[in-house]
Length: 167
Image 1 (spheres, one colour):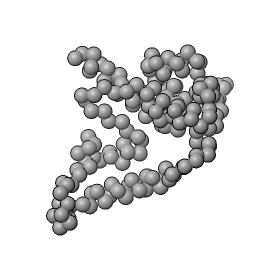
Image 2 (cartoon, one colour):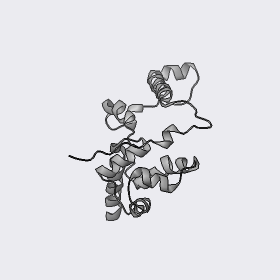
Image 3 (cartoon, one colour):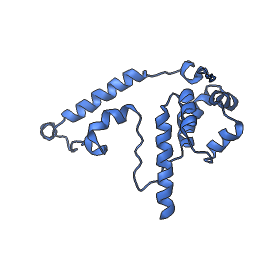
Image 4 (cartoon, helix red, strand yellow):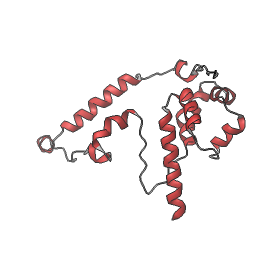
C-alpha cells in the first residue's frame, strides 16, 4: 500500500494581510466585465466622444481567440519570440518567496513545506534544477499556482534557451 502525503497548510493563504485589497473572485469578475466592455467599444463611439485611440483588438493578443477564457483562467504565460523566458525560480521568487518571507516565514519553513532537500531548493533558485511533474505538484501545493503553470514556464524557458543558444 502506498503512503499518501498529507497536504500541508499553506501559511501564505491563511496569513492575515494588512491590506488584503479585493479577493480573487471579485478581481476576476471586474476583469471579465472590463473585457466585455472593451469588446463593446466601437470606432463610432470614439468619434462621437472625441476619443483619439483606436479600438483594442483583444483577439489579436491571443493566438487562438476561442481559447482566451481557458488560457486566462489557467494563468497562461506567453513570451514573445525575441525575448528569453525566465526560469521558473524567478516566478517562484517574485510571486511567492518574497511575499512569504516578508510575512515572517523562514526559508527553512518554505523548504519543509516543499518537502525537498536544501540542496535541491538552492539548486532550483540558482536555475540548476528543472521543474518536472512531481516538483510542479509540490510547488502547486505550496504556492497555490496550478502545476501546469510551472510545467509550462519550464517548457517556455527550455524552448527559449534552445532558440537563443542557436543564434
